[in-house]
Amino acid sequence: MVKHVILWQLKDELSEQEKNDIKKGIKEGLEGLVGVVPGLKEVVVRIDGLETSNADVMLDCLLEDEQSLKGYAVHKKHVEVANSKVRPYTKTRVCMDYEI
Image 1 (tube, rainbow, N blue to C red):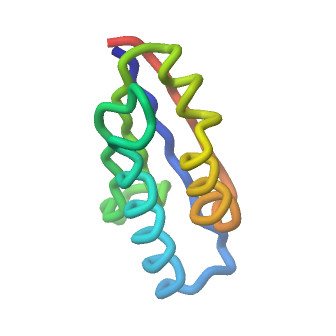
Image 2: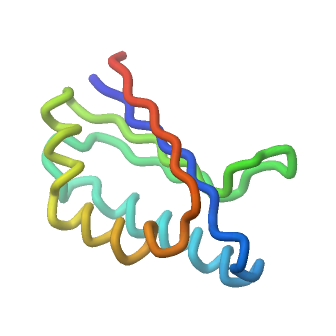
């Protein structure tokens, strides 16, 4: 099994209401990929971090194996969510993938 964890910071120019709406859209879009992308077992998106956090959104995915991770990265539905709900609104992205 492979874990795929990402932390994003949203763009500074977004209002708090815009950030809340965007975070909800990211959560809905990415969590909706389970059962759609082969090998994607679990997706948890955290959008309500404590004030001590310096990230706005966390993605925590569980995939069958490294091949599933590679397939997820280019899967049409994942790319669609990333291009419409994530990339236009984020300023930083940090990722860690590891085997469990």
